[in-house]
Length: 282
Image (cartoon, rainbow, N blue to C red):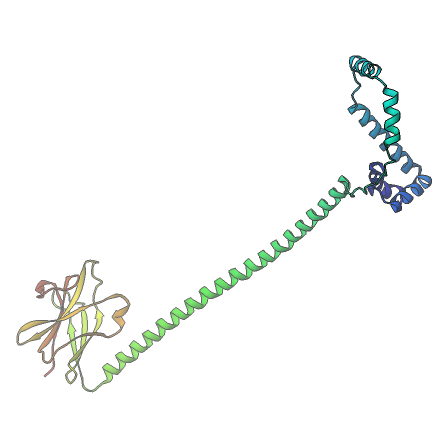
């Protein structure tokens, strides 16, 4: 070690505190002989300790000193007592207790600095790992959302394809009668079609051209049986207009018609709101 390394090692402080090991004392003595700056540091430390002791010392007052000497002079046979006491006293064996070595503040500061540096390093590493994990997590969640969206659309397309296939099967079935329902005089551009399977008595409706109703209104299909209207159910608009919608069953009918009613349907048709109507062929 050079002189500065030795000065900063803490051996001087251990030596002045009386807790340095024999090896450390030998090293210090060698450094004092080799490096003048080490000797100067030892001397400066010694002077600092002496100044501190002198600063903390308390001189007794003159009154206390006089009282002590007065008591000593008035004590009878003091010399005899002291002589007898000396004869009775046995030599006391002095046992030197080895002082426990305590790290100096420089050592503590060095350890604290190492711990702080290690903590900062771990924080940096864990922060980078956290950023990487968060990035992977965000990517995973994004991919998961995309997958769910694709799966939802796939299921929707599958359902729509099945519905279209069912509609094609109904239209192409030779047992099904096609009943065209053109618009009435009040609504000449309206158009809808009924597909009726007389064998199963199932009725399907296809909206060709009907205006979108208000939120509190709904279209309703009617079958005219023996001159009387029979409710065949309400139906939806929107995306379902391109598909056949299954309505109620009927055993016989002479014609079909569609009226616009309040939402949920009516018990009897509103004639002035009849949009389309068509007779069954034959």
